[in-house]
Each structure stands twice: as C-alpha cells, then as structure tokens.
Image 1 (tube, rainbow, N blue to C red):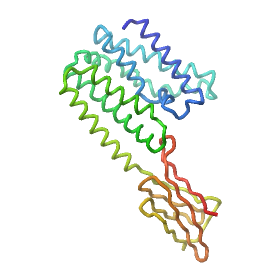
Image 2: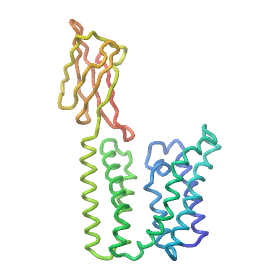
Image 3: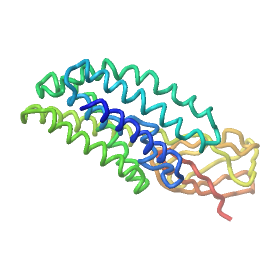
Image 4: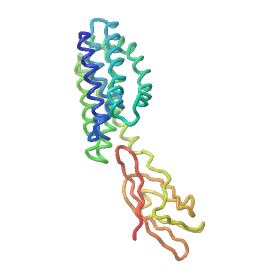
Length: 275
C-alpha cells in the first residue's frame, strides 16, 4: 500500500467518523461506536499491515495512519461542538493506542505468511471481535435493532480474517473453537449481568421503619426498603422483565410496577405507581 493511499484513507476515515459523532441520527447506534470503540479500526490496520513491503514499512504506515486519523476526528468536530477545543481532551485516550500501533503493526506484518505464527498473531483480534460481536447481538436481542450492525460487522470481520490469514482447515477449526468458546463465555456473562441497584419510589412516597414489601414475582427480583422515609429501595434483579411489588405500612398499602430492561446497552430500573 502506498503512502498517498494511507494518508487519503486516514483523512477519509476521520471525516466519516466525525460525521457519525456529530449528526444526531447516529446517536446511540453502531455507527457512533466508530468514534468510541476499536472494532472498526481493525479494518484499516489489517488493510495496511499485510499489504506493506516489510515489518518496518507496516509499522510506519499503520502508525502514521492513526497519528493522522485520530486527532483529525476531534479537530473536525471542534467548530460544531459545544465543548469547542475542550473536545481534544478525549484524544488523550487514543494517544497510547496510537503509539502501540507501531510495535503491533511490526508484528502484524507476519500475518501475510498465513502459517501458525500468523494464527497466533491473529487470535487476540478474533477473540476480541467475537466477544464484541456476540455481546452486541445479545444487546440486540433485548433491544432490537440496537447494535445489530455492530454484531454482524464484528463477526463478519472475524470470518474474513480467518479465511484471509489461514491456509488450512486445522487452523480454521482452531479459530472456530476460539470463537465458540468466546461466544459461550460472553452469553453466560450477559445472562448473569448485574441488573441490580438502588432506586427511589415515585411521587415522593415514604414509609415508617415498620413497612414491609412483598414482590409478586420473587424469581425476577427482590425489593428492599433501604431508607423508608425517603422512599429509597434496593433492587436485586435476576433477569429482565416486569413485576409488581406492594409496600404495606400499617393500614397503608401501595402497589408499584417494577420494570428491569436494557436501553442503549445499559441496564435500566423503572418503578411506577399503580393509581
């Protein structure tokens, strides 16, 4: 890959990323992630590295690509952001990764050998993309079509890189095994996700220290009054869903609806009162 191609690709990717970060329609979508997460940038790195003349050429070109593209993403946004030049403070998160691209791309050049060393170099990338892809599809299951593009994009990358940088079925079976193990671990962890936390009862409801709570579906969650006077409760959820719970305080009895759900990939707890 030529130097002009590297520079053009760096500038073009920065412009596209800045658009994804600034245009409201891309908010909380797979496209906005390009300016926040790593998965899209593997595409550019893996285009440059194996198509360079030598390990040093690979390291220099990959380093310069990220040295140009990453700060440019923020510079383009400055005129359109309420943060102004303060937006550049986010670039510091990418400085270390930009520096690390030099040694990583030096080693990454050997992907072109398509041998077991290539597979060893490729494995962390495949595991990372598989984990992100399966996690994104799991989020999509709870909140369709959220991150559907990310899930398919990451798993698609894993498949393409596997066939591009391996040469026999045994190498590909090894990659497949790594993907399956990663997927199982991610699904189990998501299924055991912490969906617990403190919340407050709506409309300023408060009770005495003698108040008691009963939950209709105790398998979904438990509810405990941590500060009855202020209406604070602690929710310990075991899965997503909806149930009712009743607070009894002497002759006073109030029924609330508890909803545990995911929104934009984050666990949400919502309590409403049954009037």
